[in-house]
Length: 145
Image (cartoon, rainbow, N blue to C red; front, side, top):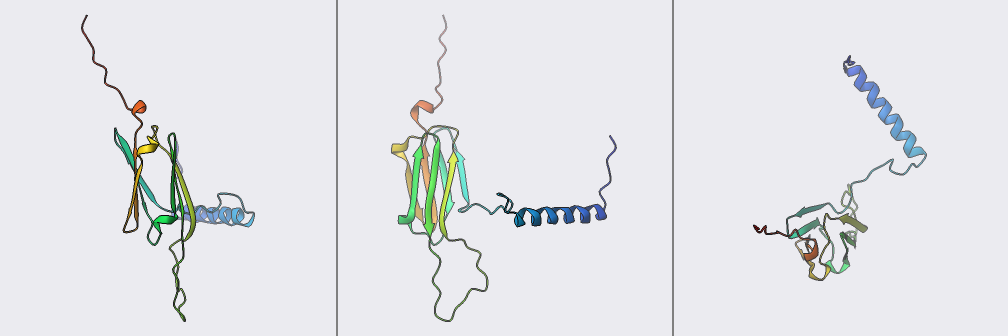
């Protein structure tokens, strides 16, 4: 197979095309034209017995966070208020997001909703999602005949 060499002038043309496409998509308001990072950033890990969801929510109030579980799906929703400025202060740069948020994830197993536990400490939300007993793998003993 013959491949075209990728020289710097090809990179410049590629960047021009990407920029044109971005401007076109933004001008006509195509959904997904501008992808913003999801907030809050979350980590999820699993083992045989459960899943753990961890979200960093600095400045959030635990009373403003809602967690719901249905089958294999967990939703973390809430809001974070903007920080109040003192008189005469103004933002030079503002990168921390505020307002309402909602993140939904589907786990590879059903969750025991009655046993879900959540803690919020130092701006970190940690949700423990135990696996439903009916969904846990069963070890079958083999008997000789």
